[in-house]
Image (cartoon, rainbow, N blue to C red):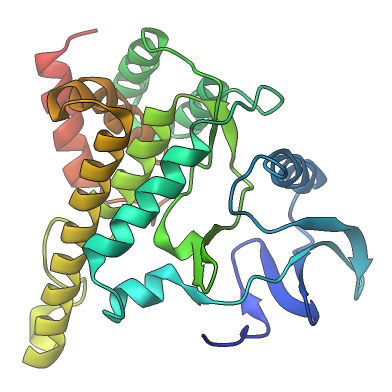
Amino acid sequence: MAEFERNTTGFTADVEQYDQDSLIKLYRDYVPQADIDREILCTKCVQGRGLPVPEYRGYTMYKGQRAIILEYIRGESMMKVLSEGQVPPEELAEDFAKVHYAMHQCSAQELEKGKVRLERLLRLSEPNLGTDLMTRCLKLMEKLPEGDRICHNDFHPGNIIYGSKGMTAIDWSDATSGNPFADVARTVQMFDYGPTALSGNPTIPTDKITAEAAAKFKDRGETIRRFTRRYEKKYVELCGLSMEEYEELVQPWKVIVPASRFNIEWDCNKPQILKMMYKYFMAHPV
């Protein structure tokens, strides 16, 4: 497995290797302290639950920046393993579902409630989502059970380190105490309505891409579809549900969760989501 790439850059922080066995996450100056405190709380909360997560090792100032220290998990990003075809997508998906299901067996009452977080995000999304759809989503959410399970809320292969010890889930900054099917809906939404989903075509003009690149993009889309459907199938199996029972439980969250992301411009394939939402509310008025 590859060694850690120094100076990994994210939207809110950079990650560097701190010592042989630790990483340090350096937050940008504009990140509110409350967001850092939340990530610390979430990360500490999931420790000692028997889950495959990196150890939290403290808060510090480093190079003049606020930072947290985390255990260094050696391995590859599961997204890289998936995209490069190192392991069959169905095999990865089954292990991925097992980790997610195990997470959902743990309670986390000390974390923010999932519905509280989603309501906040829906209200932030109102300018892009529209008042009517926001209101419908809020009314729909009122009817759904809250739950008190650990929900990652950003559980995708890019947040899984795939190494000799199996899979380790990282980046717990958005964790909540909530309904597992809301968390599943978020995972599925990222693949079914993400930037590379649905259309099956690259996001750049077709006359600007080679036939070879287009074929690779198509193959990648097929790999993602195979992974996503096997993930859902395995998760349903672990729950002891039929697919019909699962769809009834998860479908409302598949409307609410992507709607809550409309405040983030790059996050989802909005035209397709809007079509899906209106279709849902036509069949299920609130």
